[in-house]
Length: 138
Image 1 (cartoon, rainbow, N blue to C red):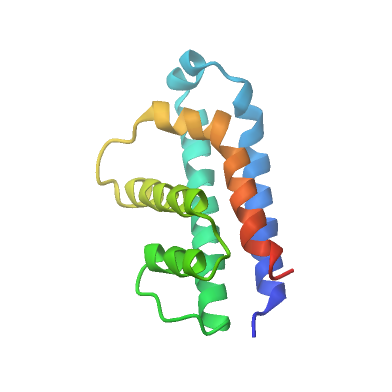
Image 2: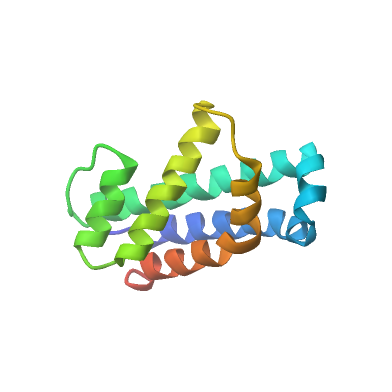
């Protein structure tokens, strides 16, 4: 059975990280691309948001006995197969996990335009997907 306290604590952490980047949404791309501190803060907080979303997905899958995913992608896929996520949510989570992997493992240089786009347009998508994941369990 799902421990709702774990779910609530992860949601609170995601909200905290979203609050930390909201002030940077007003920057133009030109200003953002010149401000390395803003870039670092936004990238770190987006990285943490994705980590918490993955943790939520894995927590649900394990605690609800939906399966034993070996990767974050598999946990997301299981939530889709169980009807918790829609296809657009699944695709968003896959992209977010890929973003997290790039930030965390420095696979390639991070495209600052992508970071800026997530900052200015993607945070609402994050909130919407989180809402769908948690709607069934809280």
